[in-house]
Image (tube, rainbow, N blue to C red; front, side, top):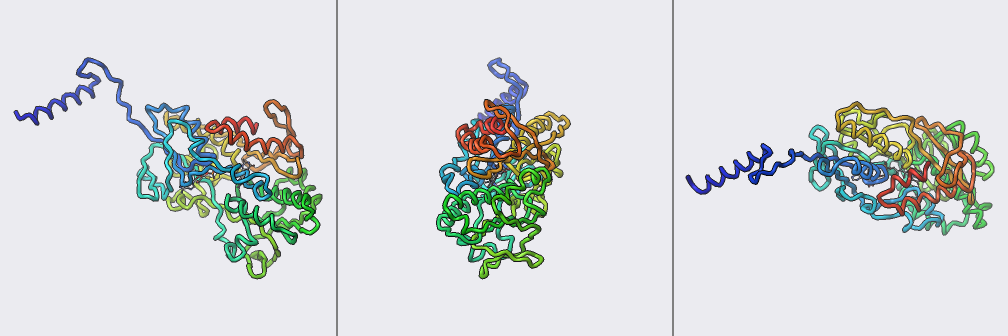
Length: 436
Ligand SMILES: Cc1cc2nc3c(=O)[nH]c(=O)nc-3n(C[C@H](O)[C@H](O)[C@H](O)COP(=O)(O)OP(=O)(O)OC[C@H]3O[C@@H](n4cnc5c(N)ncnc54)[C@H](O)[C@@H]3O)c2cc1C
């Protein structure tokens, strides 16, 4: 017998012994565990919370967790509201994403091209494939100003700005510093948008900022919405509606923008209404990630078709979605993503065990409505976008009023960034403390 054949037989024998749990030295090895992969797309608020929660609940021997994101910077998006007024600086709202990813989770900086759900794998823009056993989609939403005719015209960046992106909020800060009065229009293109009250807060903050600079009497503030009122939900409208009148903010309702006329500095609606602007602060259409559309998982706006109660994909049982990326009617906010992450963690564990998924109870989203100097109100939305009119408890501080302008509510809103930024991987725990 040749030496090579003898070697091959020896290694086959070793392998056979190994598979039969017997090692040549007499030791017994533990049964082979085939490691499975849980893949998370998007390392924003929702994806990061899921990575933190699941790493604590799934053993590293059995489950490899990988999280993928195209942008290495984590943005504290609620801070974009304050940047134009110089309340927060650029440094206040950015941190490296890795800062929030727990040990034991692989972080991959890459753009997702599409999900190939039939093959249980994800194709990256680089051409690389990532296999998964369970997939979580947390790719959020992006602004799509290109979807409105003329929005990206010659006025974009000179008279027309957004504050839903880091770049937009930074550019608007410079534009406001040069402002000497005129017509300031705050505008929502269409709904849903993330943090639905942010445009209204912007108008309130602008009012205060202009008063402080003695520019309020030289500035007309106009709030333009496709909705039937600034507050479409009856309880919020009843309690907060008076603020607009008090602050002399004119409201234009039922305005469905068709195009931006850059030459005449007007926005024009489908039914021919026109609103002039000197400065247009717009919230462009918010859409899901195009990669979800390419994957056949998204609706016409690329929002992922998701079961409202279980957060499971409506098409594939091993795919789940949460946060802004879903097509759910719940408000698109970080606090809603937080409540969803609690439900989804339990459901992923149930899915892995082959158990029936649990339906989520009423989800909540919190929005502190920044209204004026040292005051804010807090809206508490449930899944059906109904607000609650009660009190809520903050650790140490006790009961705070919902829906009433108080200094404590404003403190809570501003404290969020500090808590969020300082706690790193404990981001979910800290938000929980801050939001309850
Ligand atoms: C001005 C403003 C004010 C706000 N105020 C509040 C507030 O007061 N309270 C509140 O609760 N919420 C607020 N929000 C909303 C909150 O920030 C979002 O709802 C929250 O961040 C949603 O989390 P997410 O993980 O779903 O999406 P994101 O945090 O946006 O994360 C999505 C991630 O997916 C990544 N991604 C997307 N596509 C791809 C791809 N193809 N490949 C790889 N990576 C990809 C992105 O880079 C991003 O990191 C505010 C938002 C804004 C803009």
